Length: 196
Image 1 (tube, rainbow, N blue to C red):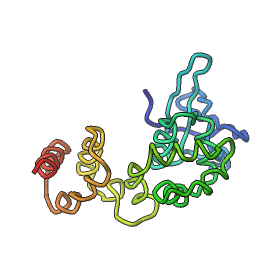
Image 2: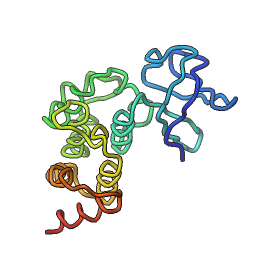
Image 3: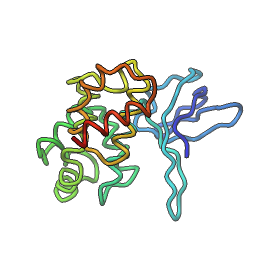
C-alpha cells in the first residue's frame, strides 16, 4: 500500500521511529532507529504488514534493505520482527554472502534463527539474492544507481514477471547500451533478449 514516507522524524524509540507526514505521525518499526536523527527530514521506505492480531508499518533506510526484508519474510518461519532483527546487524554483505554460500553458521547467529530455519532461508533464497548482492556488495552497478530511471523501472518490471536476478544481470549490459525513452521500451527489449 505504501512505498515510503517522506517526513520529519519526531520521535526515536529503541524499536521504532515516528515520522510526521503533513501533521500525521506514523509509528514505523525499524531495524536500527538510531540511524535517524530527531527533527531531521527523512525518506523511510515502508512495508505495511497486516496479520490477524496486528497491523504495523516496518521501515527501511533504503530500497535494498526493504527488498531483502521482503525476501526474508517470504521464508517459512521468518516473521517481520525476525527479519528486522536480521537487518539490524547491518551486515547485508555478510547476510547475502551467507545465503549464497550455504553458510548456516553465519545465519544461526541471529536471534531466534536455529539451524533448520537457517537451512530454510538458504533453500528458499539461494540464487534470489544475487541482485541484492550486486546492489549491496557493489559487484555491479545496480539499476538503482544507473542514473537511468526508465532502465531501472524496466528491470524491476522484469523481476516482477518472475525472471531471475541472474537472467536480468546477464542482459543488463545490453540494455544499458540501448538509448530507449521509456520503462515500457526497456521492458520489451528485455523480454526480447530473455526469450531469444
